[in-house]
Length: 231
Image (tube, rainbow, N blue to C red; front, side):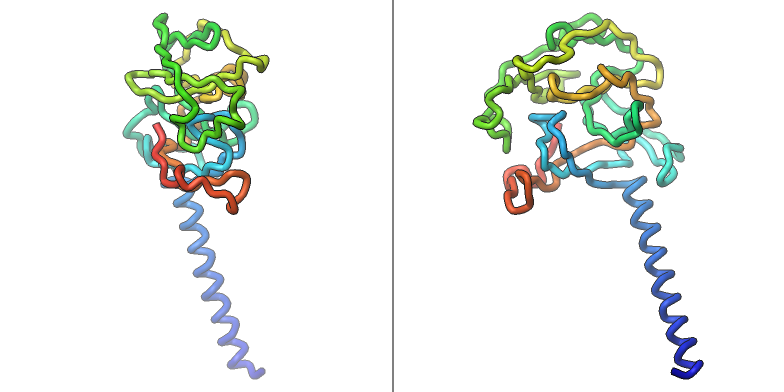
């Protein structure tokens, strides 16, 4: 191979490497600051989010951050009570999906799995398993389901009466700039009851929907949960 072809080949590969690098930076920045999706491997948010769900995260729901950091470039909203959010755990930095229960300035308590916010009890309504899309009542017979109402927004929560769990705490004062997070699977969720409050800057985005869902593998899709809006 003569020198002319060698130079052309080197230039060709340099061009492709540059394009790949630019594409990687753009994709990484998009996932970090604008939108992403996340596989849910555990049942801490059952029955709202099931194991095997892949959820869509709107990272522009509250603010715009410098990609791959927690530094804000702009902020236009704060998480609301009842929002499902993605954040970094204060315990180990692991990315978690939980629901906002306590807002800055709130007084939060729980007695026998019943929430109290600022001294007022949250309302609950019994719920049948069959009303939850994709929730297998046969496999999940140990669960008791209720509809919980937060700020006039209702969502299902699950309890496991036979499992030892932290069912009472507080009252706790939520500091300014901090949030109290809980999983909807109340008796089987590592949340703010264990790792404490979550700083506003650690909240990465809001979970809006299930994009796809499968039961154990892609060979067993839960079609009814595809593009399923979450509340």
